[in-house]
Amino acid sequence: MGKSSKDKRDAYYRLAKEQGWRARSAFKLLQLDEEFDLFEGVTRVVDLCAAPGSWSQVLSRVLIQGERIGRAAWEDKRYNEILRLREAGEIPGPSAEDEGPPATEPRQDVKIVAIDLQPMSPLEGITCLKADITHPSTIPLLLKALDSEYDSSSTSIEASHPVDLVLSDGAPDVTGLHDLDIYIQSQLLWAALNLALCVLKPGGRFVAKIFRVKDVDILYAQLKVVFESVIVSKPRSSRASSVEAFIVCSNFRPPPGFKASLDNPLGSATKLNSSDTAVSRPPEPTRRVRDDGITELDLGLDNLDLVQMNTRWIAPFLACGDLSAFDADASHKLPEGHVSLDPVQPPTAPPYRQALEERKKQGGAYGKTKLGDLR
Image (tube, rainbow, N blue to C red):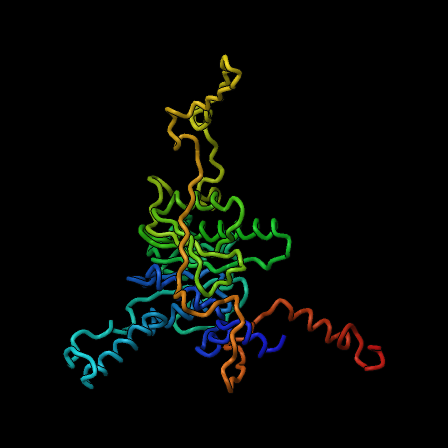
């Protein structure tokens, strides 16, 4: 598919190139920030599954360079326009500048670490690590990147200087086998959460991509164990036809006595005692046949606490982003004189590179290089 047709199909793909983003996913993080104010008071961030680096770009420009992007930039523009109209006398109000937009100053002591299995082109102020977040050896590397004084030989896997925010935009290369793709995504999310438990400070936030599929509420309940607030959000720039969404977990509060462990993450190997199992099991229903032949079924739930029945908890869902913005699923007419741009950052190590190299060794398309051979 050519560039022009792709530009026409996806407005956010075109906007990403025009605004200098490495990928259209930058708009997803910006729209999440508009709704949840993710960057308020944040100076230490870990970006998981970061390549090609669009989310790290947002972090660099907002936290390090002090830029105001998205809705913040729109508010600045609106303020300047109102100020101009007041000075021209077209609208009532003081012409002097009473309250300006928030200052756009870079934050102090910012530390951002980006991790991905694929190599990523460098970004200003970003520490890039090529590592696998599902492997236990990645956690000491991350702790070392966050704190240069961390002793790699130490048995402790907790950060001496915890971070404020952990982001994860990772997803597997889908195979088309939906059950397999859903399982791999859940395991990737589990790995990201286990890593976040080692570096998040109390009250910190965790934002990750999730697939809204059958039984996903089990994952919501697991996240609710260590976070006070768990909300599922769908940005405007995320296609409605996609099952992806983003889980926004706020106020990290691990249970009393909890310690992060690589051998037993989140207590996954913990077994319930027989007494605990008995408490959580609902009573057996009883049946009674009345004189008129009607059978009454008594479930015995009148005096039973539903919490003791191990009921599932459903996270609230929230759509974010300006509803008047571009529709990610629609085809938009290209403006007159539109010139298709090249991607800001081409893939550094695309998975198809090896296939192209092998084809080149064989002499072209499946070893056929001459026109006569292709007939």
